[in-house]
Image (cartoon, rainbow, N blue to C red; front, side, top):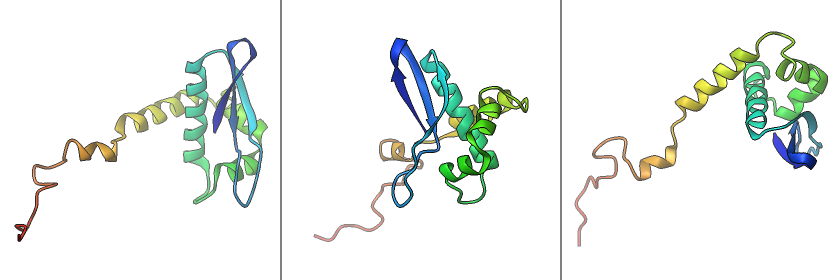
Amino acid sequence: VGAVAVEGGRWEVYVGGAAGASVRKGDVLCTVDSHEDVLKYIGRFIQYYRENAKYLERSYGFLERLGIDKIRAVVVDDSEGIAEQLDRNIEASIAAYKDPWKEAYVPATANQFATLLPVLG
């Protein structure tokens, strides 16, 4: 998943690319006019993928299985009437996210980083 700035202040949103053993160029999901729309369509795609991909299926495999036209119809054109639900679900996931590295600065418990045994010197 990615976005590329194009002429006129617009953005192309790409999905389904792959690197490594299988190389695949991403497909253009849509072209939008604002950064907010980039985030909206990337979020919708990610949530649709989360809800509909097979176990361990990579996003490029998901895209090849369903096809860019089907994914574009659902995510951009709202052909199934689920766009608002996808938006709500991805927003709920974002709101529930906890940064695991934040505990390095703010321990989850008072004794999380306390030494259990005295250091012998």
